[in-house]
Length: 267
Image 1: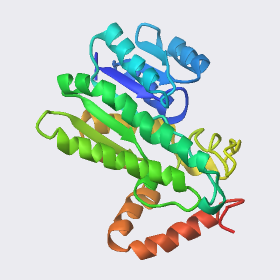
Image 2: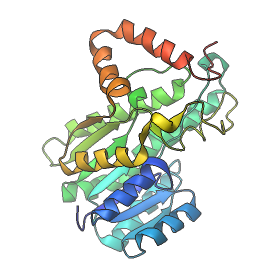
Image 3: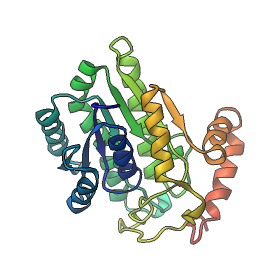
């Protein structure tokens, strides 16, 4: 990765921040995109301003995504890796949720990926680089209380898998990453039924995979040009396996697992 230009959305915290640190440590030139400019600037100062470029970006705005790519190319002249990491979650039953919450989830998680990919794709094809998307195990199995989240992540998986096939003979590497539950800030900003931020995590994150460990796995998947990365055994690989062979059993396990959350909407 030394000297490669890596663009990461949602880089101000969690997995995105850990990815920025990892790729910068490995010698990449990192472009960090997020809305929270203060966080980006702080991270930039830590990593060294010469190695990184901060671009304030709201991925729900197509123009922001276009400018992200243009500023990257103006500074570095190329794009070798795009990691679509920006995302938000939700926690509410569909029958109770304001539909604007689902629109917001799709705008950030799906359309944010589409916009950034649209403008970066010509440069990725030129470099025969990597297009990556961070989905979730919720992109493989529907999680009750997370309808908008699961729908957006399924959509991203379908979008990226299709792009892989469309560009099969053009040298483009497409990676779909499905972490299990990872310690990050994503649950703090998850939206409730009314579209307000949840504000605190319903889960004990002490035993979850760290963002740094997750970023290390993703780095090596990019390096070795893997097509899929499913992280954690019980919540990840086993879930995907059961979804293929015993889907009805997985439905029951998913329901019981999510019902055990503190204040679960599955009453």
